[in-house]
Length: 371
Image: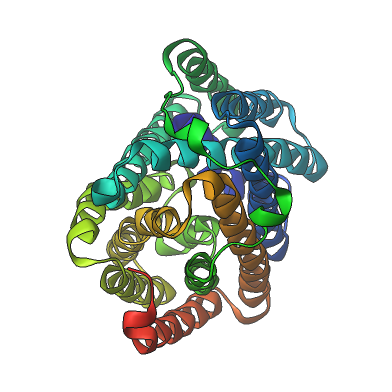
């Protein structure tokens, strides 16, 4: 499914800007809205997972909705249709993400939880690596016909559904029988440690906007449209190669210090991309961005799992995703406005400043941050 998604996402900003004439501000809003839709859905999905104590049916529903959205992209001729397809895809992602993470949390012993979530993030990047490579090959063979490349994305989506339905089995453990009865009121009274992690994640997400802006920057750096997906290949290679070992390391030394490193990589990425006037400098920026992702994404999931009782894992991941989604919507819209009104350097420079502020906040919290 990640291959299918990246086939579309690496080319969609170019299609919106070049073919449909959409402004960068609107692209930023669409990207932010997509994330917000997904994260709002994750809260509902998490509550439903805790209530039903079943995760695979929700995962099938979510992945299925995402697969159906792939049929719309090749046929879309207007921004409204693109927004509809994105909304379907993101709702599907929202439905499936929380029960998937809850399954991982349930089967991972605490002593290797960071490694488990890091491994999931590393495996996620396989799609992020192969999808853009396939997009480059398809764009070359199809003479830059983006719509035809969108059509290819339906194939891996269908394969993903077949694997999920026939080869994935939800684990059965005795822990579920010992859980207290689900109460909605209890789901909204998560402990202080969970809300602390959500606060940390919100600050981090405010400093990092959508990769759509990184893709648009590639054109300024000298990439031709057919080769823009290469930047995602580089980014996901750095991401995938670090997420698993970083997660494993966090099980031994704690998570806060590694999160600070992730923000240092993000600040460096912002500054590099802001002044990237050549392909080589731009590639350095995307590597730094990928290192930031590898040092942060798996850790945040592990921190939520560490701080949450077993019977509220779905609710906690749902609240986590909802809060960060609201922040992403605001951040992406602001980044689009800055790009359009102040130039392409502005959002990256502001992102660097926010990264520095987040580093200071984490450092000040010190030992009080859940590790």
